[in-house]
Amino acid sequence: MKRLILAVLLAFTIPVLLAVHINTSGRCPNDGACDVGNTGTDSFTLTTDGATLAVDVTANAATLTAATTGTATFLGADAAGAANTALDTTGAGSITIGSADVTSVSIVTDGGTTTIDGDIQTDVGPIISLATGALTANSVHLATAASDYVLPACETANIGEWVTVIVQDISEVVVLQPASGDTINPAGAVIDADHEMDSSGAATGDGDFVTLVCVIADMWFSTAIGGAWVDGGAS
Image (cartoon, rainbow, N blue to C red; front, side):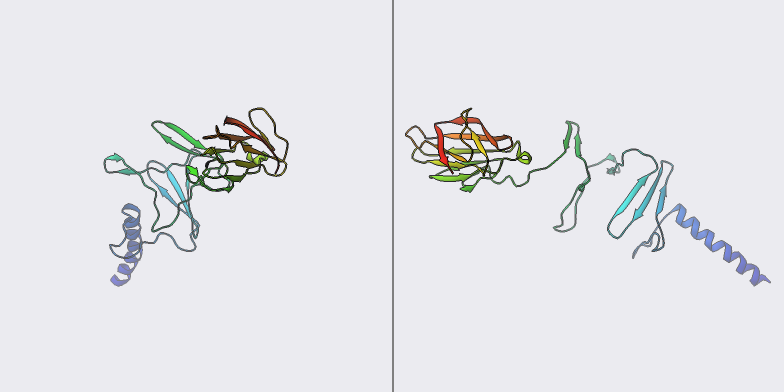
C-alpha cells in the first residue's frame, strides 16, 4: 500500500516539479543544445509582465508577432542600458534589408531621418572615367584623345539621368552619338534627331565640356556647356 501511495505521489509530483522548473527558470543544460518545441509545434509565445510576443519559425525564417498593431521594434541594450547594436553575418555572407514589396527604408538618427524610396545606384564606377565607347549614365568622362562616345538611351524610364564629358586637349575632337531616335539640345540650339554633337577641336577647345541631362523622353538637354559644340551630322 505504501508503495502504491508513493508511486501515485511521484506520478503527480514529478511533472509539477518539471513544469515549475521550466516556467520559473527556463534554464538549459550547461552543455549541449536547448530545444524549445518540436516538429508538431505551430508556434510558441513569450509572455512577461510587459507584453506577449508570438514566435513562428520556418526552415529559414523567424516571425515575431506583437500583441498590438504598432511598429515592430528590435532593441539592443547592455547592462547599463542603451548600447551599440550590430547586425552581422557569419563569414563572408551578405545581409539583405527588405524585399521586393517593401515600400521604403528609413534611417533615423539624432540628426534626422533619411528615407530610401526607389532605386539605389550602386554601380557608379570611378569618379572620372577614361573609358571610351558607350557612356555610363550618371558619370563623368574625360576624353584624353579623339573619341567617339555613344549616349545612353533617353527614354521615359531614364529621365533624370545625366552624363558629363570633358575634353582634355585642344587637338581632340570628341563625338557624342545619341541612341536611335534621340535628339541632343545644346544650349537651346536643337540638333537634328539621330545627329551627333562634336566638339570643335579648335585652338580654343582646351577644356571644352558638356553636361547632358535626359529631361524628357528622346531629348538630351545641356545644363552646362563650355566651348564650341556643333552639329556633326547623321551618326
